[in-house]
Length: 75
Image (cartoon, rainbow, N blue to C red; front, side, top):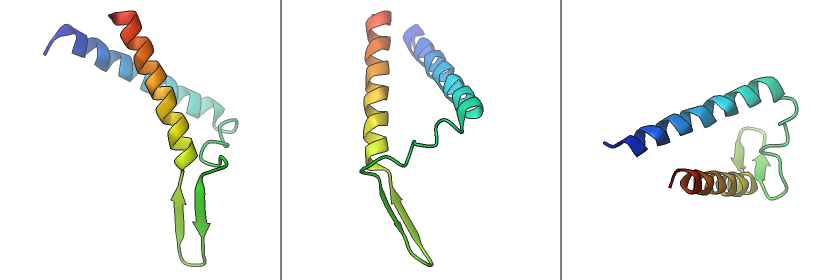
């Protein structure tokens, strides 16, 4: 274990707390998440299938940008 791993864990924790605060206070403004065009939703009488492909692509891009920013700032 080294010091950079500790910084990474602290940074991830801070982002998780900020994300939790955003969801807690702005849950009514974030209702579009998971309902984007391209998200697959099939609802039948007895079953539901939901595959948020567009939401996950956007989430992946956001996480990638944040990690690159972290690497740029720390390294």
